[in-house]
Image (cartoon, rainbow, N blue to C red; front, side, top):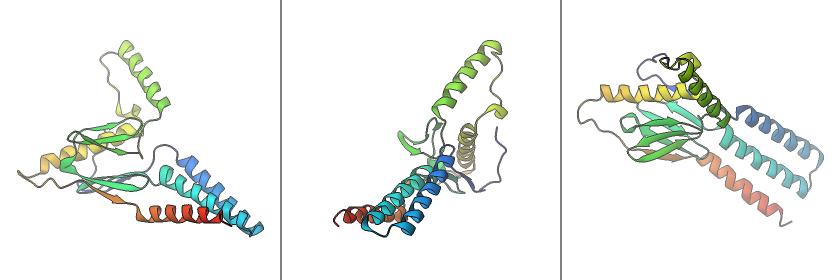
Length: 200
């Protein structure tokens, strides 16, 4: 079990995989851009810088931007180019595997920030089989649970609490999607700039 958080407390969970790769990639992108600008002011140099910046943006969007946020009134699934906001009274089942799936009725919304790696899932399955053989009446303890499982539990607890505290006939709210305008605009500008550079 996770420690109960104060009612309405905001909790934010960053990516559970790929963070180190993402920051190292951004460091390499920055180094390439700076060194190229310092040594090559030609069209080829500009093309290299634009390509590096495009790679950096992709790394940011897919490896570092994703996040799961537990707000007071909703669950937010922030992905590469959009954020889905789900009111707590709309949250049904939650399943964390390689990604997080939140079910609203029969529709599943995916959050890419939190997930188990394939290796950790295989390791957990082997451990569970071994435990069932050696200690069939002992369940997995919270201390043995990986972070994605604890986050899944926290989401379930928050949704359950919202259901318990809701007044009869309470408005359930609507699921909304907000696009990451800044990242999308930067992507378009970099792609157009790179394409234009090949015209010279």
